[in-house]
Image (cartoon, rainbow, N blue to C red):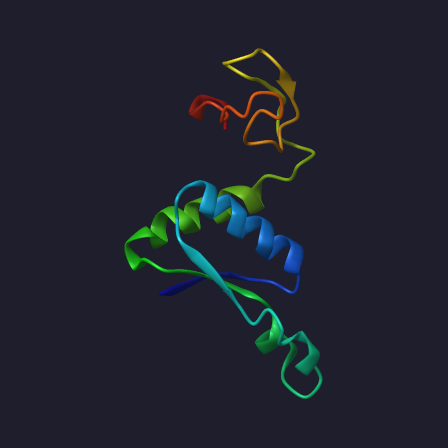
Length: 107
């Protein structure tokens, strides 16, 4: 197991976990319930951490995490679903209407 990401935001760590799981990368979240120890423990030691199960998937996982973090939701371009033609905002990785994933060339 290797640590891929850590943040004080449970929401961000949870979103990144979903992003990795959608790409079939098995992962776990550690320190989910440790935030209550902040003050007694160093705050960064209490942050939730995202770990991948298979070390061989580390590079792909880091690429996905870094790609997500480098693109803010507001700066991502709109795209059209190749299956149903629905127009979607840039932060979506799958069509909300039909569930089709965004085509690789639209990243």
